[in-house]
Image 1: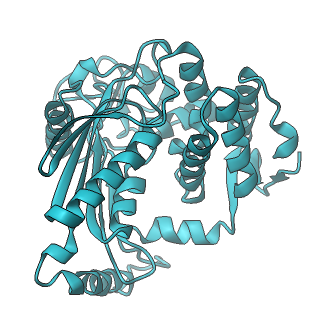
Image 2: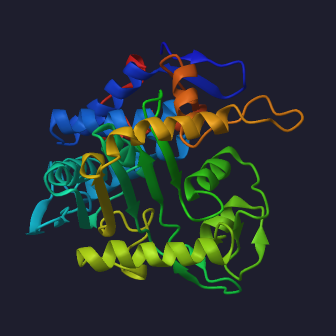
Length: 358
């Protein structure tokens, strides 16, 4: 294996191109079309380059398991089941979420360029990685981009001890003349479940404000957290926004809401059935739209150059940290040894050996 060991124990550096190729090969071995395999692999590796390993290649064992068990289909895109003016509904047919997200981005932006704005609601969808990836793609096409998804119930209402709604991510990206779109990308829990799974895999602990055990007690044990519930970000604010996103995604698409969305790491033969929503708002439709990206950049620079607190080396505008992390990566992904080993094992389940190519 040509992957290089990092100075930090159990961290391995892998060239992004090699990693993308290896992940794509796994998908192709499972019967995914080569172009589709490249698209999904690229999105997963971009998450790694941006330091979001919880949405990167650590997902591959679960993806492979679901494809092998039939709950994720091998189709390239979903079916447009309704198209009325600026509102489009897509039935994803349980395809890989990245594929139908790219499809939805194109549908939304193409329609927005003609109609000023457009909304694409998706049902019977699958995990799509980071919501910010798709909001950013919309922004790169000259539109304000919004992407959101629901998940299975993971969070209780404030004071509750029963999961009611998912941590339902939302991302908003604004076109900018700067080096990066201004972007907000957040799940509405105190942290992503993927980070808790990473902590569990590493045998570590988690902060006490991240999650709760099944009885509603705060916990620092990631295994208890996985069996329990995530804490809403900002308490009732995070819960309320997540609750509304659940209804927007599932309600407008005619798809799953609440517990109708199944556990991502549950029965691999049972479709996940999440619902998603993509919105594109065309800047050219507004009198001052042409100047909007300049104003966005000016405000982002106000943040980046703002006075720092003692001991703080740098202040980042929304979206800047992911951009800076990607630039600093120099085309290399830093994977835990366990993530790398699980990826190699996933390849073997698909019938190929990727170890020598990494």
